[in-house]
Image (tube, rainbow, N blue to C red; front, side, top):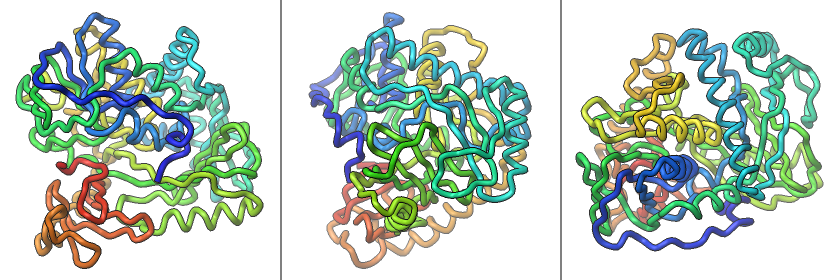
Amino acid sequence: MKSFWEKTVSLPLREPLRGNRRVDVAVIGAGMTGILTAWFLKQKGARVLVLESGRTGLGSTAHTTAKVTSQHGRIYEKLIRRFGPEVAGKYGELQEIALEAYEKLIREKGIDCHWERRPAYVYTRENPARLIREARAAAKLGLPACFTDRTELPFEVAGAVRFERQAQFHPLEFLKSMADEVEVCENTWVRGVQGRQIFTDRGTVIAGQTVMASHYPFQNCPGYFFLREYQKKSCLLALKGAGKMEGMYIGDEGDAYSFRSFQEFLFVGGEGSRTGKNPNGLSKLREAAGTWYPKSRVAAAWVNQDGVTVDGLPYVGRYSKKTPNLYVASGYGKWGMTNAMAAALLLSRELAGESWDYSGVFSPGRRIAPGAFGEWLSHAYESAVGLGTGLFFPKIGRKNAAYSGGKKCSHLGCKLTWNEEEGVYECPCHGSRFDKNGRRLSGPAPK
């Protein structure tokens, strides 16, 4: 299923890696994080090469709602409780810095990517008390937040937190312009990283430093990100004839539907769940959208996956203490656009040896916060169940892979679920997806 963004922008094809190379920095993954990180490092004088297993920008970047905002749902009260006001404040400040960095690049380069400043909301149809507390917490941290009960939504709400002067854009229009200035090798599968060597199916790259910006970290040891991060899937529709909205919206938890306009289209998202747990999400979303906008028609339908950390902060920085030359950027939740820019700003400074007030805020080596221990236990339980049941089934990708019978993931061996609606196998443990013949579509599983 192609996203709306894929249908409206075509990126030029790049050649794969041709033999062995030696560079200052190798970036694995040509999504928004990878391209921006490579671009910033290039401005600092580094020789940078981006390695992409598929096509530039056609992973999570092409499937996002493309909201560029520091309003990330009801997050700031949680961050204050888990990490304290200093870390929570730096998280919010960094998102605002990322927003301004996008605008600066767009203006300086004259990029036509439909950049628009819009207010952003998180709403609830139930008790507004939590959002009132969230508005107060965010405002106390210096963010442009206030509580309101006025929205443009097609149903009544009990209240919402409004953030002023946020933004939205066309992500592939922006990425296409930025990627033109970066060397990218497409259709080049990275099999593993060992020290300064990056092994691919096209040759070996020797890099002084390596950044893994592949959405979900695929190298299990060291790092052990599979114990600390899982993936959630969301469904999205682009509707024509549904009217327009000035604001961008996301619901709080149980009623977490997303809304934003683009030209004559209205994007509606929702039915979010852990990957593999909601196989009929698109059908349910179509039904909800048909109720709210009965005269509209669906111009595009697609799904997206987001890496979710157990404590709510992304992982950006050194992969582990044992890998001094390997870095990672992952776990953005549902807020990949601002966090991609934030990660690129952080990594480009860290790799250049520059200190910054925000360095270390997203450190991958941090301990699990006490308030996130329950989330970690829930993830551990899901993984244990998947691993346990997967013991009895053949690995996906073998010659006997077919519709009938169970299969297990080629990543760690969790049992896959068959999604009839989309025609894919999905891993509830860590989010890998495969077609009916066992070909990997996304996730940390090997090719």
